[in-house]
Amino acid sequence: MDIRSVEAVDGMTAWATAFSIGFSPSYQYPKPPYTIPLPSLPILMRTTDGGAKWEASQYGTYNEGFNDVSSPDGTTAVAVGTDIIYSSIPVWVYVFDYTMYLGLEEICRYNSLLTSDGGSSWTNVQVDLGSNPLPDSVDMADRGTGWIVGSGGGVARTIDGGSHWSLQGFPAGNIPLKDVRAVNPAVAWAGGNDGVVLRTIRGGDDSPDLLSVNPSSGKAGAEVELRGCDFGSSRGSSKVTFGGVEAQEYLYWSNGVVRVRVPSGLPVGKVEVRVYTENGVSNVQSFNIQTESSAPSVNTVSPTQASQLQASIELRELRIEGSGFQQGASVRLMKGDKVIAGYNVTVPSPNVITCTFGFLGAEPGTYDLVVTNPDGSTTLLKSCFTVTAACGTGTASMLPMFGIFVGVPPIRRLLRRRRRRIP
Picture: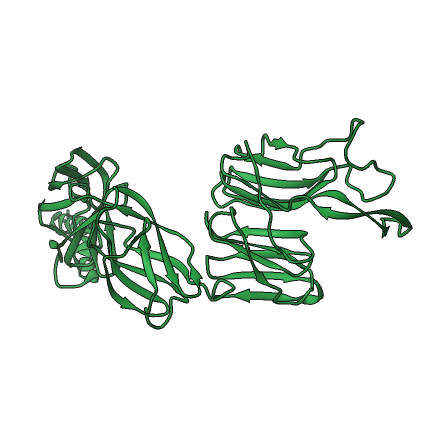
């Protein structure tokens, strides 16, 4: 068995593909249907314990060969390769020793497999790569968007996690493409024979590409900004949908940025956001719909100031009161690009948060307080906390005070020495 590719998801989870030992187009091997035992070795493997143990599964006949696998999260994966069967049309074929044999034409019974349960089950998905359907490489930018390239020079793309693929063309003619790597749903690289290197920064076609939705959660009527490319310079008949429901209001539209309001009537939880234009449909980004009661709110913060030299505030001294707080919430103080993160955050009730902040060396000034729940809902109380300078102004103002604190003990010792009488 030859390992063909390895896809690492993180330090513990990885996938691998391999060729079966029996793979050969030689006439000496029996053709389907098989009536005798044949070599059967795993061709798709997965580890979740850093490689100490691999789970393996055989798929198809003994002639299979999988070239590549891509997994954006460790559970979902797309594998590409071939399971060779033979047509009924006799042709002359060359095999490994360059001897010509009378054999049968090889065709591809499947060229893509999709799993969403960690490899327990696989779905055969046909990918249109033109007259030569043999795929060589796959890479998923995220759970929805990915590319496949093949030996015939074809490039195919999916925006629904591999359930459907669309042929984007042959950007290098019929030159075989051997590898593809996706950066995000709009940017990808591919390489092949004869030194060919390809790049797209617009998803490989004119359909819209959705890269981000900000914020990622909100209530009906909230303003949301979508960023990407190929939205079109003006809206026209284009639209944005949240969970299949069109946006409530369009505030701004350009080729790379769209601002809309979240429509009403959607269920609480995650929904899919898409952009529709005359050139096609975008990939999916997620948005978390909140109800009025699910969004947190901050009413008061106590205390409202701290000294720059105060190393910490006791756990119970910084108290945030409001509503909608969830266990696991995070708290930050923000002043422009300056961020002070809270720690030892506790949520004794949905109406109270207590936490600790360190202010040693913090930049003096007025800070906003931001509370973020684990479900992504967030709230901000502006200009509610002040960090005061120990002396003077600016971050460096703490240095003279620090010098005094450090210098006091030596000065006292020196004075004591000078008080001693000389015998």
